[in-house]
Image (tube, rainbow, N blue to C red; front, side, top):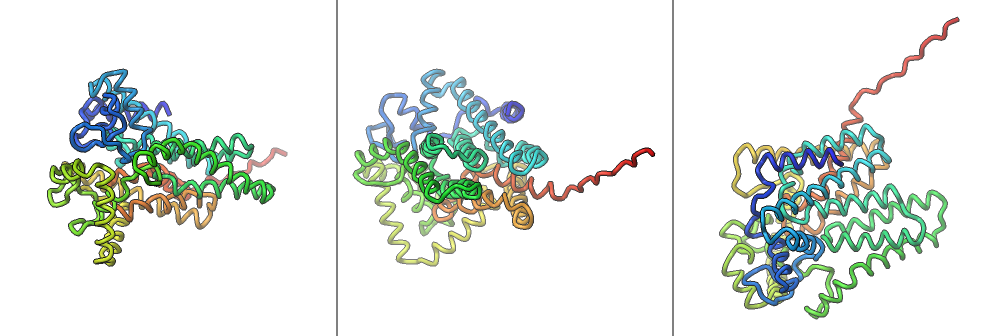
Length: 407
């Protein structure tokens, strides 16, 4: 983990990104500043005002607020600390996946996987970004290691695992659909070890109870402010709206002038201010429902495009041709390695099926809403771990030679 931290931090510093200002449209950073001002957890669009927000889960935003309270609001020092903390989270993630690989597939696979992570353009180019991505990656790595390797069986540990699931969701809930996969895998392992069905049902119940307890305070807060029960974040209608609008091609290319989005476009920002954040989300929901009724086939076509871009990448932002080629090769390369590793898993390393299932389940919310390359980074190490399983199978195995005993 220390080596990973040094390598990642060094390339961020060499690219001059450690203390660079974040993007002007960074909603999470803006919400952290408003929270620091004492306004509360409020909408990041428009002037700072008392408009409660359901846009994001609070975990990472609260962390940035603490850092800015200590090192200054938006100062070079606070920007550097936020990035270094993100890099630390990414490095610990690599360490956890190394542990998973050692325990499940052997040290050779583990070493290859970490090398692939440290040379991955997808991961290295995004290491300087101020988003919750690295912490989401860490949460996924922690839970996968917990259920796949540790597989807790004592009731307090099982309940604590549920609390951990809720804590990770409070940073970003994108791994939620993977929770059943990991719990079922742990359940299956304990079943093979002789656990009775009743005790396994109790196991699942304890995980669910811990999870619900962890997310309960934020859920109650949302119901109080918005009068509606939803899962942690209320921005799903906006994501559906931006990714499925008549002018959309399914990609989150909202910096383009023909694709309005309240973060980038004044007209939509004014509309959100007038309606309020949650009222704007409900307006997006109504428009999406109308578009669905008008042309269901277009939603299917956009979903097909999003599947392609999720796995093979797309960049609409200005960058050099070299950077574009390197990034696209990195994204596509990870996918090709993962597919190859999946074939090996199906063929002869069945214990890797849990990794395959994780990769298949994770993208589900994104392929029906909107896609950015950043959205798949939390599972990038899982893809590279699968790739390492495949690559190690290509290496010729040394045959042990028996030495003749002297007479």
